[in-house]
Image (cartoon, rainbow, N blue to C red; front, side):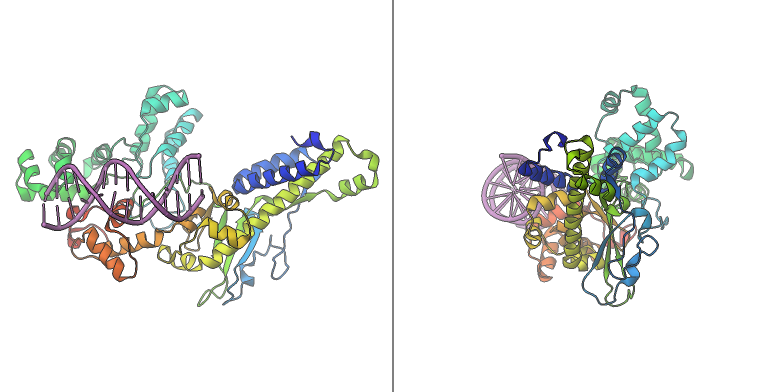
Length: 469
DNA sequence: CTATGGCACGGATT
DNA sequence: AATCCGTGCCATAG
């Protein structure tokens, strides 16, 4: 695209360069890898450099991922680029299967479900449809889109959508892909068929289909009357439902932060933060930024020198390729530099968050960061958008989390509710927060609570009657 | 009367 | 310029 302007209009080249850098910045490593792949295939003047050296000890990173060079107590994080296959970072092992509803952070929900239903998917079209449907789930694991829409959009018969959807709904977090919370509950209820007496299941079904409102409002008296049960029996029934069913299949369980399949899709993170050696008191943070081939390309030196030696070769397609390669290399270099500085600064300012979790998140805006780095805010926005990073804990979070001002407070709200003995009202929670030095309006507490999937105080059972925690 | 959620406004952020 | 977020006000449910 730029090849036609090779009569070195410097300004045009400069703007092209800038635009290119911007696009590169906003690409994730996977996208960039694909792009570089085609560039390398079509342009012999471009050459990749795959041997990178540890900035500390100088040895090759390929065989010697260098967290071990980290010095205990060093405040400066070590930030370097590396090809994913040479990285020290390993995706967190998919551990704890203690809770059936808990999708691990490593296996995302989508991947987890897809694995289960894959054998039952006959055609590639069905597989693609399954991926599509899983991608359309909202953060609670419900499918807001109607099957008819999905069928139309994917150009497959409605029956096909229904078949795949049924598979999804009966896979492990059962009820996933239901249209409404009630439907999710009903699907889960079916799954309990062989483990509980049919009569109880039938009563539960009736309560869910016809008296969802009474159930939601914990009005045991009215519920009992409607179903011909005593108040106590109705309460038991509600307990049974609460213990065994989950209206929001994607939420691990009540009160736990929602897993958002859309954000942490199954693709690998773009960077990982590790703890250096000497992990005890003050570990140094080691940041690995994953980039195709370590992220470094250059102009093939032979072609460059040959071109310099022969002025007559200018304006040949060959020269254009070299020029194009030059620009690409420079853009990439710039992207890498920006990204490295950005992550370096993030690692410094959000060190406590990285080490100790949400509670220690410091408020930070893209604008502040832009000022410190001496770049435009939009540069930061581009660099941050759509990228994810793995924390030492194994969690993979969007880079945007580093700028979430309310994360710390939300975490405190979660802790306060988890520790309460008797249900606290939003005002009580606000007061406790104020006592802890955080002054926010009652209305805001309410919003945070809702975000965390925590029910209002009057619908919350006393701590003793609560499942888990 | 109290606790909560909806709506909308203004200021900050992107 | 568009969007997001915290907040105040008000209606409603218990």
